[in-house]
Length: 353
Ligand code: SF4
Ligand code: SF4
Image (cartoon, rainbow, N blue to C red; front, side):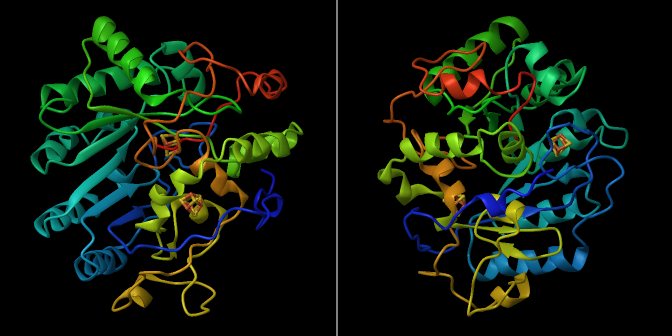
């Protein structure tokens, strides 16, 4: 995989400062029951990196001290971390909302048969990647049989009240070098197709832009269209999105407890900056206020502010117009046609679940 950090300048992205910390997003490790080709952390069943209990305790301590209201758990498959259920229960007892980023197939993994019941019993908010409502597209991106297993997982969650009483959000990101279509219209398409064909309901669809980093950025670079994709993002920059980018209120933590301004910066190895330290650990943040701390920005940040904007919570603005069409899905306009025409078919965006 090609290095993409060296392709991202400090450029002209506006300087950002934090409001504070209202959410902690923690990567619990790289173990996963799947081995998707496009995975940005190369997760799989044989990866052993996992957040340890002591680090998870520090995470909870920071959660309490900074009065964050949300703990957002990701991976790999975060549920496969041996401390996952303990962490969820502790965070819920502190009164925090817990979000977990679920690949859906993990619900059928041996030993996880009661996972869906556990999530429902703790009212955990589930965010699940379903990059399309068409079986072929999902299986091409995530592996054969994944679509069917995902539908079984969604039905199981629905039966427990997810999508109605409990929050079940789905995540879409484009399969190529284009911006996501308008979130609300794509959400209606998803709602209609999943309900009519499979009887599945969900709470919201979150549309996310692909970041020119890691595997996706590497594919752009190897096909000679990295700069063009960056120009697309830069050209669609909307200053009004700056107020809502997630790094103003969220801190991202890796499996070892090191801290970043967001998950993308974590993937790039760009640590949060505090008092000139080269790296900041969870334990360094106990007793610190991050209010007004500068955010580490690079050119990839235009991926958060382009068009309707993009964050782990989906589009930032519901006002922005739709900017493109996506293969097999709804949308309008095609500013990135030349770019897409030169993008090798079968390649896929990073998993931003
Ligand atoms: S993309 Fe997600 S589901 Fe696939 S291997 Fe990576 S973490 Fe697992
Ligand atoms: S990429 Fe990260 S640091 Fe840059 S704007 Fe988006 S959330 Fe903020």
